[in-house]
Length: 274
Length: 303
Image (cartoon, rainbow over the protein chains, first blue to last red):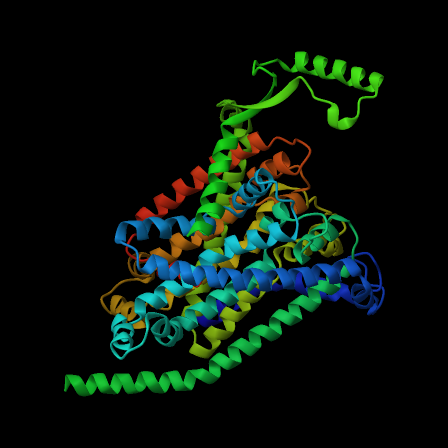
């Protein structure tokens, strides 16, 4: 009985989360422009979507900006994390706290402050400012992911490499980088995701010609009737679903290996106790 | 490092500078003019230039803009106190409802079989990955005056209800958009609660409420605080949700700031002052919640 009621509860919450999305998807096949009357099945909106140059261009913009910004953010963030790791305790805490500011701060404040900066520096709002802004809010996420990996790393590995005749650069490349690689990758992926999804900061730093997809969506939703938005959301939903399934499946594959390792560890511990 | 200084600290300092300054018209010697005087002089100049057809690059106005220090902007924020309190109140309601909905759900998920846990988490995160504009747009469709919900009620002969452009709609939008932010940190601390701990409490005679109040809630406290901050901060500073679902009648702090920078009431100085107040308010909130859970910060890592 208890299990049953909890099932119902979960079902209701998920219904709440998914109904709006399904309504959008259903409407994307609706021949009528109205969002509430069903007049027949059509794929017209999809065709229109792929002929809508503003949308296609802004999609391209989004991807380019996300890629450039994430690459730079990853580089900067990794270097910053290494710098922070080697600092003295007081400066380290200070710098860490400062670098977390864009995460804690409401997005709108970050967006507005960057806009003020660009205006004060007389940089015209456009691609450059968008990329700079995106790098700025992505860097903290990279630091956040790389720093723990640096802490986990055994420093003696690096020293051993030096003792065995590596130059510091070579030791860094051959020892430190592989050790922190998972953190760098997660940071990079997070940056891409946040950059693609960001609306608020882009809204304040974009120029007239450099629209990203979320900004185009925003201007489309302001018009009362724009069924292409429905088609677009359906496509995005499917894309995200596919990405998530792929991620989960690959994780599941890794899992048995993990479990085996864990079991081995446990056995070893038990042996040690006995 | 230099990057961080340029793009993180300087912009915030700029906000502070803008918040405490305003531009006023002055003459070339730096003496302050009042608005009317300045307007008069400019009008005279314009007329003179036009008359003598002086080329654009030779026109030099006797009136220049000068930036002066003032606390006027900060004081003026006071005028918008009702709006600010309103947004804080709405965000609080949304956060509370998120907690009430999310807490049992997170607990249920954390007690499930490992594989179903993964599945459920995916289901929670999936809507989060959709752009929030699209999600909010979906609610516009549902809540409209002749939208689906009103039609549904119409089948039973009730309604139509005025749902969009109300405070309730904005709060609903906040809950819908930020519910996953509440569930995920809660879930991540709850998976760490061992079933045996709960069983031990039950064996020792604790009733349902005792188990909940003495075991589960204290052990999930870090998740609760990070969930609350993860929902409250975006809710209090949002401006799109209120614009799309509130129809511009329910102004929030975010709308106010937006209006000062990109809207009709162009006044970056006042906008900065409001931003500064918002920022200080949120940093205060953060330090209060941080004081609650100093030892464990893992709850927020999932985000």
